[in-house]
Length: 473
Image 1 (cartoon, rainbow, N blue to C red):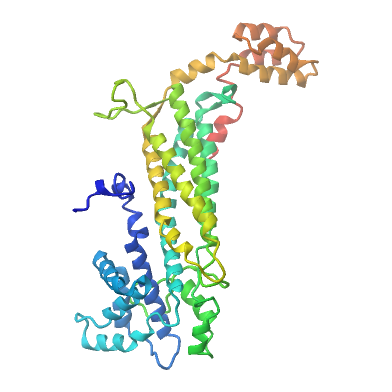
Image 2: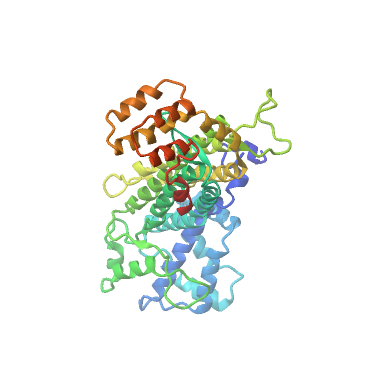
């Protein structure tokens, strides 16, 4: 059967495939293989610089050729590794064999082929499969965070910040418990979300991406057996934490991660849980925002820009549905369901190793993929929003009862007894008009300038510091 996106089991590779082109190269199995190749090559080159008499430093030409296998890694290379895996039934060993085959390929010069072939037994030297896998997962997640997650969040934050500033002065009725409440501004409510996102973004960016290369149970057993007088712990740390290679440089190059010193066979995955929790918390903020916008669209506070040819309902021609915010909410929920499972499951391993993490880890890209879909939907939806100033103003003009709060607060300042109770009696459960409040204010025993200030107050003017706070974000 010819493969087509419409036959895909997952909507990420079907309906939404074109929207995830920046995630797929990083988090697909091909992306995982590319990272494994990078790790194996980095370890191999570093070993040549370790001073082992049996493994002399590789030439500049050899280093350049080896690194090109990672930087130029493409689908055909991944498929070649998969063919080897059909025999080995072990994906990491298949990578090792593919690399050894590469050392003997006919396109190499005779001298280069001889150099690499002679040294090829040091590929995967003293490593357990998990040394390669955990570092590869770390590279994947580092790239995913920097190139995709933070990039999209920064766009969202910037778009929302601009909206907050633009709408900073537009008064809007608040609704606590769904009931009319002290007015705010549209911009201030958006600024609230920006503030939360800025904090949660910092938490995502601050997570240290960890990796270990310390052998089968974390003690460098095989390493010490092969070369007991060498400081393997410091060497491993240097490989993991040194700056990645740029071109064919001869200096010591590593993976640019953070060493996990204490581990069993697997890296404990605590940093993964921290990262996934941080992304999930950010997603929860965006679910909250998606639902609020949905509600404001329903109230008529926001209109949506029309798109030629787009249909809101198959039977009701007038409809323009808030589909982008609904899509975002649904995909954020799916993302969090997976992220929460990853966070709860991955730090748990029976004794020194069980394999339950392996299949779960293959779904990291799926979890974040749903989040990325949601971020894109929000960017689109927010770009289509238009404030319906008339409807917002109309709601404010019908909510004079919200001025009961400032009136009773001023009364309390001047020691008038029963201030709260008087305003409760005058407003609770009643249709409150401007004239009724003005009559009440005129009869208060407070300074005349305070009466004047209260009489000039309207629901649209009662916004406190909302405008200035919105502009500060």
